[in-house]
Length: 229
Image 1 (cartoon, helix red, strand yellow):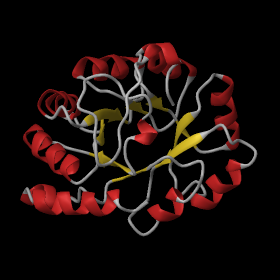
Image 2 (cartoon, rainbow, N blue to C red; image 1 turned 135 degrees about the vertical axis):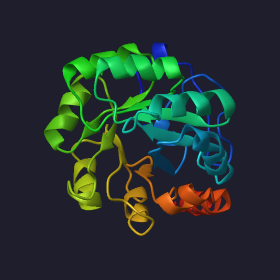
Image 3 (tube, rainbow, N blue to C red; image 1 turned 180 degrees about the vertical axis):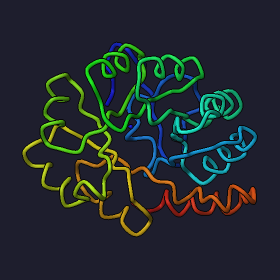
């Protein structure tokens, strides 16, 4: 969840039990919580109660993916009404989306991969960002550009925890948020690695709980996720 150059973002501190209550970008997304919920919402009305349940469960960093037309308004609603949450935008693919997400109040950006054009836009946004990688060559290319924090995606399909473990010795500068196919049974394997700051997943926001507006269940699942490390 890489950090832009030190001068572009003010420092901030956070922990799973003490989420940020500021509109400033976090210094590092990887250090906000054990797990970053990956949220896909079609209904903006669910955004605020969902975010409050996740924060109450100890997961202050929330990635809202741009997979639905409602996503920018979901980011905007959480940013405006749940200040203790650190809301970010995921599945960011273009510079135009970077601009839109910044305007909506996103405090970090996540992409499934990266291009030079997208990387430039994310860097210039002033927000911390996690460009996606799935190979050692991609990691090395980002390290050359001064980016040290990345999303490992799709984690399970790209080699899982064993692959990330193999990168730790030759590329110790890189830190990761693995996302993709991770659940409560596999998350601890990733979280035990020295080059993993957090994991991303959606198991604490199941579709049936959202449909039923079962915020107590979401909070319980979030609390269990926060305790995985």
